[in-house]
Length: 198
Image (cartoon, rainbow, N blue to C red; front, side, top):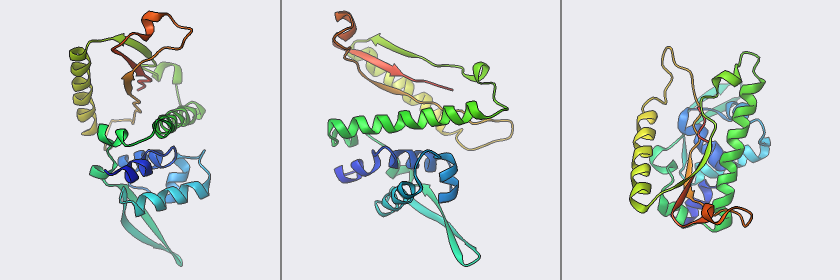
């Protein structure tokens, strides 16, 4: 992915649209229900920009009265974000992408808790944030293990009888503590694992 497309994808709204469409085919009205905190004009603009940029595609069209309803899905190989893609971003663009992911997680949690059928205290299996002190080899091993778990979960992304959808949010990067934290919390080689929720 070239730098322009990295910037296109790692936008607070566009990354959320891309992530939703990587899980299922939707039209804009359905997207608006999932991303109900995003203004409609911003949502239409994001879909248009992702479509023009080749990140999503039209999967089918349905005629409804005098209008044609288009359905979209993310193109798998184009919607993935690699280390090289992130490297083409400015620091502010990278942080904006992380903020977009966190807003999406918060919106998902809000919708779940608002559901009268939810048992949110019992259902939250993991809510955690930790700082792990790892050397280079340990960090590499952890990354490989996490990628293997994510690959296995990707195979279970389609609904099946007896299953319920779960959201997982995982971010791992070197950690630099604030000036108010102990010096040991800011030492070289630490990784932050934030918000693994299921």
